[in-house]
Length: 390
Image (cartoon, rainbow, N blue to C red):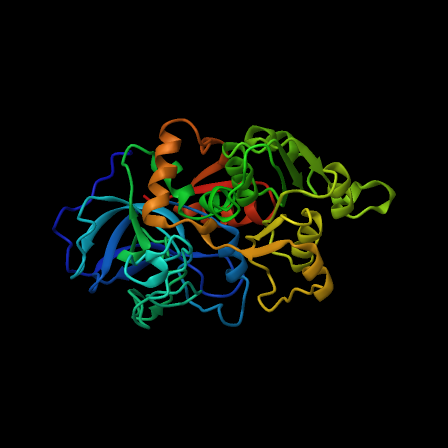
């Protein structure tokens, strides 16, 4: 782990001044400003963010002028940091611990968190809120006293942030921060989708719609699970060679298909009836339906991972097709992973050289250059851009 210094004990219980990247208007460049971060309340932890990475979900919400778009706001939800101080009723982490914030809670107390069937906490449900999870309030203000809204219960584009302890996972400090932050959302979502949500079996066939960070995470998870064939569907053919590193065996470009065949027709022909597992990683209703059409009747599973740019988008299936096909379709948040138990497993598998995290990092920049990260991701020129906060 990088040598990260923090003022031990000196700042606990006091407001902290630090730099943060603030979105003051929808779709406009972020502004680097000095902000004030309040001390943590009960069940909360203030962390020094070491580095963060930019996810497409940040961009999707940053573009929205209406709710859940809220401004001014501190975005960012893929990160890793060091505990600076803790509030009352926090006993699972202490000052100096190396922690990973996650957008979904793992309270450990509710019916869902105690069950192996779900990772969706019912006590602190997942939502795109501008506040802390237990109360409608913020821990950020600017120097004029204006409230700054939170994002995804993390807000990691700030050198310090306050996170509910249910959203924090303590991890092995051996993993470098510029690799650990990737496990805070996108890559974990992909690996978990293959491992937990779909339970990909050895020798099976997998089709992945969209091979950005989440899609390549799915490929990595499918490779680790022993899939025999991993088909990538994407409109950028240059991604195929890179995808081979993660186990991709076949590539389909929908824009160059012969005889005007649909992707589902091509996949069903290639696989003699359809893929065993299909994953939609873009966030597009029509792609969800194409993925569903691409999976095999009887046992095929379609896992929906992408956040649609149109938050009110609807899916449409013929009732007779659903009845007679015997297929399964399910949504998956964070790849069905339980953060506090599953993320440490992924960390260990990386340290054991099983998971290829290094290849996900295409760029590394400083906080002052954060708008470059937005440009690179929107132009499709980066996979994951790590932002160093200090």
